[in-house]
Image 1 (cartoon, rainbow, N blue to C red):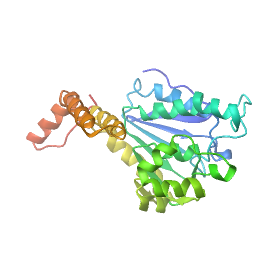
Image 2 (image 1 turned 60 degrees about the vertical axis):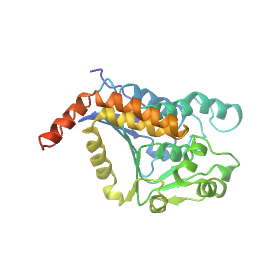
Image 3 (image 1 turned 180 degrees about the vertical axis):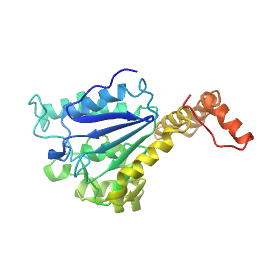
Length: 267
């Protein structure tokens, strides 16, 4: 396997088929400069060669991600406002989010403290978002005269409906982890002390599952948000053909017939 690189803005580890990305700017509540978006996208490239079968994303310290770093990245280029903001979104943040959406393994986000701005979109882009009770989700753009970005205008109406998405974006109100769970915006809300253990247990469970089927399922679900019913039926048929020819499907059938626990290998 290829050695894992060392990054400036994140920690990246893989153990027992679970990859973990930890946003690592705790002194700035893990605000995200363009360099962090690039580091995250680069880390994604190492997932297949390292045999990762699930990805866990969290933040170091008191926050998950407090949004884009308006003070600029390590090269001193400003993120906020005008042409620089548009360039940062198109060249750094949006490619990272598209790469995340295209991964073929399950993604779990463990949200501690604030998930604001692009950090909110990033946190909610996982297949399973687990929030600690100290977590909150904030679309703060309106408070500084900006419009939402990071894909939140597409994501939030699909997660919680148009009225609640409008509330979050136009009023700029904090949504607590418990309220997010009540809305169905996140998978669950747990005590802060249990957050990482819950997320790691879920990641381990998924990493031991039928990886090809899970990755295909992930693609069908996300593509289905913008497809017609007939298109989704066709995608399911194609996905079923792929999954049914996998070694994991054969193992699942044999384990069922032999009345034993499955031992999926992710192949």
